[in-house]
Image (cartoon, rainbow, N blue to C red; front, side, top):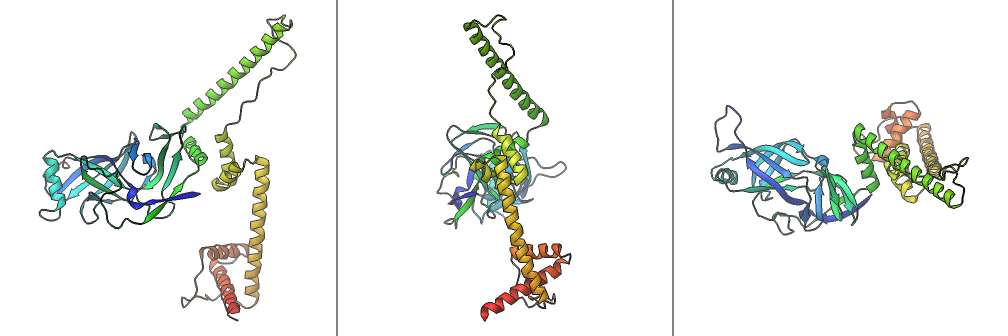
Length: 376
């Protein structure tokens, strides 16, 4: 998949509305602990200084069970927490509490100012926690996509999957969407994954209800019927012009010349994905391979992988034959298995009907032998 690097401070946007909520029933009003509700991110696009027209797919948001709420994105000015997350009409709605921990702190000031009617807004921070957890779809001019129940026209950037790391409360009118606000240590860049458009289209298709799918099928049938009717009518008109239209211009004993309807690319891609997996399907689809050619290529890939696996198993068997006693070679922490070696160990154990532990021991023995040979 393609990736792109962006500045850390570009991964914030202010689009939400913050308000204090009523105390739970039976609890006395407090200046230390006050519930809130906020729309942290609406389902609508905003104009972002780096990404242009930008929208977050709120169904694709991921977060911990409880996240910190701060003041103006300052790390050292925490004012509360959010612990409920729901999507309502495409909007991301959070619930939590502002909590004051000492006299005169920022949270206490915020509570007093909000109760006095001063308006505040919400700004989200969505910095990736790990590579690959933030996926964007980039729409070009003339393209469109469905997000949060809305149709978005390109050019636009859609954050399809994204982590909600923190939420900030800001004075109404503060521009947290600019490149110059507010945090420290933000010189580094982070990596976003650009997703394949065909794969995202298929994900949206999979979300459709049975009724929506049935309506789509009916629409295709209707269009096919209209195409057939139009072509049949055209044939009749030609018959009349040639003097062959004794029966209202319909030529009998000949099939109607109905042009085949182009195949639906989305359905074809789904067949590829079901058979070969998303990654290979995207590659084969991009190459324009037919199903038959793609199947051939897929079979060849599997055969090559199988040969490589057999060679690896043969190496492991040789290590066992030469005296590997299945004692862990890394008992002193001198060696560890990589992810690939761990996978080979499990496959070797499965193929030779032994425990995974013995498979690991064989791989470690081989690894140790190769290391000693390289020293010689």
